Length: 99
Image (cartoon, rainbow, N blue to C red; front, side, top):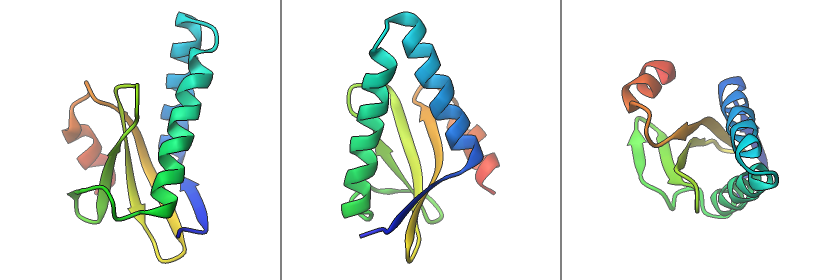
């Protein structure tokens, strides 16, 4: 079980941007999004190897109810979230960022 959860600056920015977008569409929807992300992260904390490797040592987990994926890396004492990535975006952009 991962002791710590580390969001990169980019992942934190993506999370905040998605939250804001959902809140402008319907009040409370952004909170629902955050709850779904938190539930996904909690599952990753308990079972970090549950999801497939996307590339290198980075895994990909789908977020329930929302078209987003978490790209994360299990570390010995932490779970590092590299991206909160919308499924419609080009994954090549993410690969460039993670190099």
